Length: 295
Image (cartoon, rainbow, N blue to C red; front, top):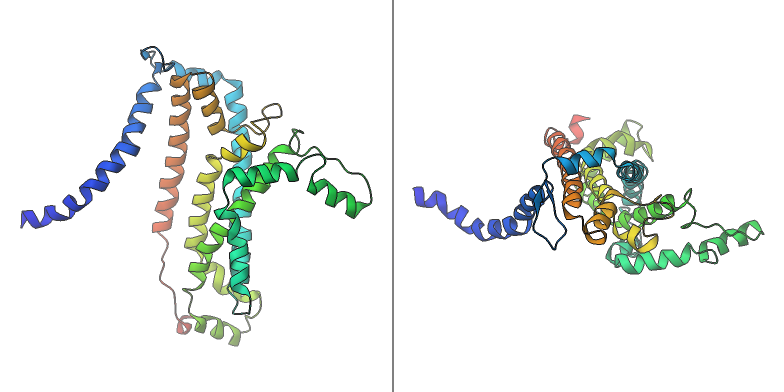
């Protein structure tokens, strides 16, 4: 009897070992290094809480933290609402919808490097975006999208949203296709038709999926790095630099691995707390879909 209980864990053991080596071990190592002064050359020198104390007085850290919050506040609502609208649109049984699904999902499969370089050209002073605006307004428009601190962060947020639309749309599609059609038929009899039915039926039943998208997009926004690295390198004047980019800069640019580890632990704790809190909220939500008789 005891052997039978151990068999499932024996099957899980290889995966658990791999996960422990690639995930838990680096976390423990980073936690240790966050209490040291380490430059990848000399041995780590234990300095206690000094790295965390330095974070509190680091003005650039607070600036990049504010930039990260701006990414979070601006990108996440768009990544919740727009993919939901697209999912409802492509869920219609019309000719050609499979093509539209592929078009909307296409940015997800594009390499971040390719997408970043393409959008960097689009945002250039003589790029496609300024050309289109100039053609529409009949004026010579030359907006410095990525070199002006007032527009750079929002230009990169737009690219992040563009890349995430298809991915989150697929999540919503999975939820939409699990809703029984008879709910909409019953709602139509009660006078809820057109777009009104989505407020009465679709959105309430998709609440767990909406929360899931909110969690995933929030975590992605807090970890944004590639777009910033490719398109702006944190400039101008650190206006697009995020906390993960700052971690990279300190760790691999200045070789302050102890300080970078402290930043990483702060990011890890923030993401961990957000994830645990939200997933507990998700588990408290009922995924049972009512029938037409419940309306």
